[in-house]
Image (cartoon, rainbow, N blue to C red; front, side, top):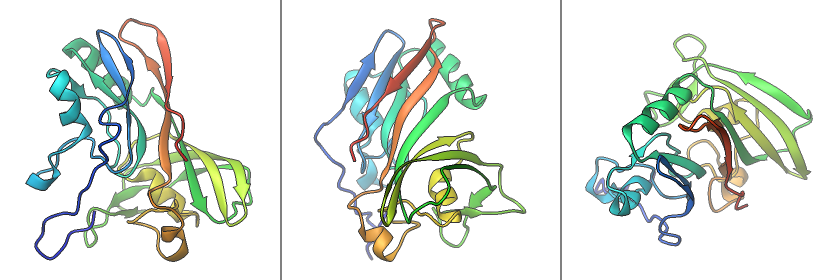
Length: 222
């Protein structure tokens, strides 16, 4: 996030739609977060607006289960009671939730599919950026496959097996195909090729607190 000289972050989250609810029941809300909106409030007073705070205007007891980066769009879950929160959060912790993302990356990927297994850590000199760290990094794995080749760019599906901060963004950069519009990891043509980060959390599959396996999808907006 850009920060001007007075240390007040530039933050202009989208207002339409204010909140997009894909599904609601007695246990949880399934939401489609737009790019540019924080999942939860940040410490700076200028960063109070978030998906969580908006939802809590109507559902005061709602609690965030999973989060997305500000610039990533797509599916976010919020619980409506403690039991639901515990059961779904435990699945994220155990890595049994299947998460599928769509991204458009720079360059023409030659292979049809692949796996990335590179440990990650925060870059201490460039926070909040992260980096591949073969010595002190935490394990991170991502599977990917090509959906469409578009000349100098490629549409891909990304399946993260772990949930590290900026994992998909750093992993795609590490294999030479940075995600378009990524203000942290792209530059030049790749940065200017899109007005937003072209990364979208499209599908979540998990066990609902009622015991049934469920899949929710938020259609990719790009």
